[in-house]
Every structure is written in C-alpha cells, then in structure tokens.
Figure 1 (cartoon, rainbow, N blue to C red):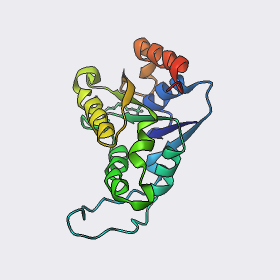
Figure 2: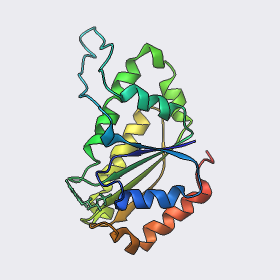
Figure 3: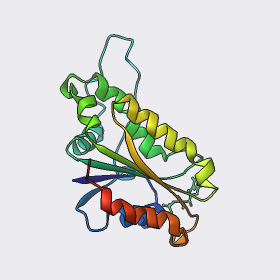
Figure 4: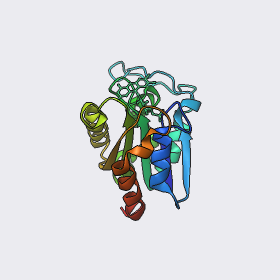
Length: 180
Ligand SMILES: Cc1cc2nc3c(=O)[nH]c(=O)nc-3n(C[C@H](O)[C@H](O)[C@H](O)COP(=O)(O)O)c2cc1C
C-alpha cells in the first residue's frame, strides 16, 4: 500500500499533479496533512515525564504510515523549506521514539520505501536542496532511508506540465514503487 503525505495548500496544484503522475495505476491513500490537527510538540524528554496524548490526529496518521510499504512525502517548497504541515508531522516522531506502544518504530520504519516530491518556483533544484537533506537526515534518525526524490519547478497551477524532466522521473517511479 502507498500512502501519500501531502503538505500542499492547493489540492490540484503542481505538487499534487506531479505526485499523481508518479502513483498512476497504483492503489494509494492520500493524506492531506493540512486537513488534520497536529498540535505543537512539547519537549519533555529531560523532565522525567511523558505526554500521554496531544489530543490531535498524529497517531491516526502514523498508524497509517506504519501499515504502508511505500510512503511518498509531497510538499511545495515554502520559504525554502518543507511546508509547515509536513514539518509538524515530523516533529511528532520524537514522541513516537519514546512511546512504549511503538517499541519497534525504528525497525518498522527501516522496512519502508520513503520517497520525496517537492515543487517550488524559485530555482528549487538549487535552493530547495536543503529540503532533501532535511528529509534524508530525519529519516536516518528514525532508522529509515530516503529511496528517491523528485524536484519539480513550477509557480502557477499547471506550470508543472512544462517540467518534462520531473514528469518523466515521476513516470519512471511507476516502475519501481513498492519494490523495496
Ligand atoms: C507561502 C509560500 C512560500 C513559498 N516559498 C517558496 C520558496 O521558498 N521557494 C520556492 O521555490 N517557491 C516558493 N513558493 C512557490 C511555490 O513553491 C510554488 O508556487 C509551487 O508551485 C506551489 O506548489 P503547488 O502548486 O502544489 O501549490 C512559495 C509559495 C507560497 C504560497
């Protein structure tokens, strides 16, 4: 099963279009992170206490991720970073790493095929590179690896059609998704 963690604010925008080109023909679940409540993480790691619940939707989403073989993180570049919704989701991994109910979190995440798609309008192949490194290091911290990424260049809706290289890469993914 493929799960898309979508962090864009335009459901029919460039990021969505490029991502759908990569998963065409597959069954997938599309999780629009902007439609979920992800409360700010509190760092209590050194206070000898645990936060039992954030009263938000994080656990519902992480359980779906853990039940998937392939996870595609899809985000526009916002201020030279991943979108805030994607980052809010990552922040909660710190909570899961300490949660006794998720003892095998790292082992499970290590088995997954993680991919990343980002789209930006301001030379993202150069200026968006920190997003790739950010995801790579974040995944490594939880025992996982980033198997591949695509950087799309687009500003207005529909612009991505002109990025034939990114679209071709997305089509190539159709051959390799779910093979880990
Ligand atoms: C709040 C905001 C911040 C943005 N910041 C950047 C940026 O730092 N770098 C960039 O390349 N594009 C930036 N953009 C442009 C978007 O990444 C671009 O329009 C992209 O196509 C949006 O994806 P979408 O069509 O899926 O919404 C920004 C757009 C918005 C709305």
